[in-house]
Image 1 (cartoon, rainbow over the protein chains, first blue to last red):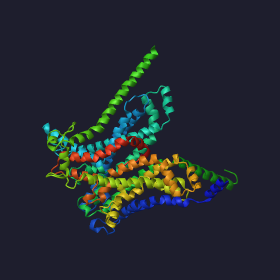
Image 2: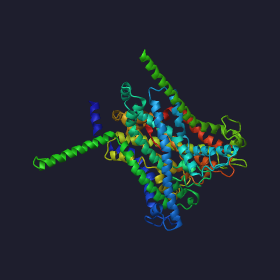
Image 3: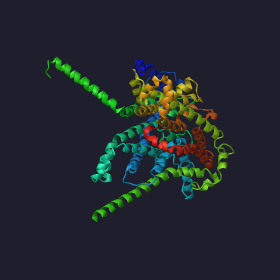
Image 4: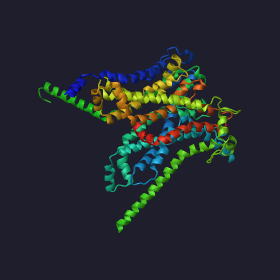
Length: 344
Length: 295
């Protein structure tokens, strides 16, 4: 009796205020460190650069970046920005294709009950290892192996064989290839584990049925694994695209002379960074140009982000909404029927 | 008899396939490990040896000399390099950020799961929507606001405090609580006269330990490795340089590069995180697919 009165009393108390209290710190901090900087970026994109930072210039920064202008500086900025966008796409495609290929292949192998690969756990641990290492150290390590420097391992070996040293960073094909390799090296283990969890989520009785019906491995892969894995692949594709748009560490750091960014490795994120944190720009930050480039990057990211957002939203919530919509539709139909005097 | 033959044949094909797959896996594992092993071996050979034998698979005995040459001697790569300062600073930033991230994310997720209030669904939708906004997009406004307006250059505040708001971690924690935190417990605690905040601290947090542990590991690694934001805020104070910034400066020395010293510096930056990884690899590999946060 006591318990039930206490229970009913507790039920009647509103705990809503605690809900607000629990989520308040998150939103206060988020507003201060993320939302305001985003709005600030937007505002800055309409103002001047360097010494003229307080001058309102409207859409001039956007115009400069997208279409260039009359003077040499604007044209150079325009060229650099467009090139940085192209570079981002090239570098992303070049690391995503080998990465998804390798990780799908390995994930299918590791989850195939008919194959007996010893040491699966060891392989998973080793293949994920490059992903947790600091990108700076990874870039530094590969620069010791292969870079412009005459003391890099590959150049020493070339010299011993009587060849001229190669300036790997200066050559677009070499340097892009190396950056793509490093990116694939760092990320394929991560993608593989994501794919494996996707495959393990597929109902095992489907594989069993296919096996009993005499499907070959290739048929199982094409008719069951890949179609059912499609949402996972699409999810990985889009998150990787968003990640690719932000690609910064490796392209920025794969340069012997720090800050001397090569034109064929400059990604959009590197371009933005350079505007306020490289060379002379540290003391004379080009916030206007950086802001405009950031906002354009934001728009592209947001379009891609909408897809991820839709996929993350709880499935039941989507269903609930659909049901609600159906109800409303039904109600409207009834109303219409009533209005028309029972005639459809 | 014929059936047995077919079966034998089938087994043989599977055996051959397995061996083929195993060889490919071995090759890929070698690609992952060999660069790191060569780095460790090279870190123990001096620059004269490395200038004739740039790739070593056997460790030498010159690590102490290389270590000395990173910051001292006539060919010092980066005079301000101090491995202990680097570790300490990275540890302060990564440690504090991790604690803030997991505590406040758990708190936010708890608020969103346990209580029913007007803006709850809206707040959750907002968290999902902002999850994908990259730092690169807000960095211009962030730097101008932190360094320009607030004068927080070289301060750790802009590097640690934002960790309180980690949308992806909140998303993950909420998923976890929804599936494995029964709300009846909260009710039972209330009947026993337990305050709301205490319920969270002494019941919810211990029950979500697995999720918190996984997220803590990932948050720590992400913050330890974060070069982008750190290099944006820490401009000039070399006492506050973190490990990634120190490594970048050591490698930025292109006039008189000392290969041995550079390998030694890189090895020093990589080894702690690799050791932590190998100890916790079970949790990390198991948590990747759950966390699903890509950089």
